[in-house]
Length: 196
Image 1 (spheres, one colour):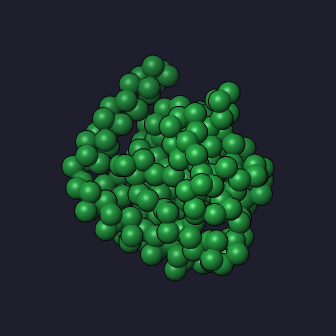
Image 2 (cartoon, rainbow, N blue to C red):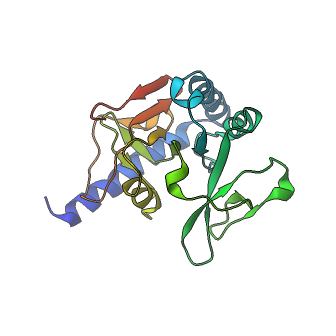
């Protein structure tokens, strides 16, 4: 199959998955987000982590805000991505949940102002996506930030795709640069990907 055909299939999959997301009410997203966080907090892969990379959720994504609070309370180093003015994604330490310790990044997303951490420091990475498949394949928003991040990780890093159950498909169209996650967390639980 040609790269153009795969890109077209990806566009169709994004449209389908986004329509599933828009069908969720704010209450359904909130309840599901809390369930996802609850499953993760009770998972060994979270409790063993000492340096975690989370993300600031868009309105249609599961919110992981309570995980940052849990990490800070337990003395775990937590960070979030920040898109810098030059377009590079950096990873900034969460030093406080106080609004004054945060600002808006180059993409208009809230991000911490803490020290920059290197990607190799993380032993747990929460990965957002438009959709995931049981084999750990991920369909992102199309800018490639997380594909590049996942490709640069040590193999022992715990990567967890975070999604609502409606975002899980049996299969996704893939290109050679697409990367897999090792785990998937939804409101139904935390699952090891089939091919991890």
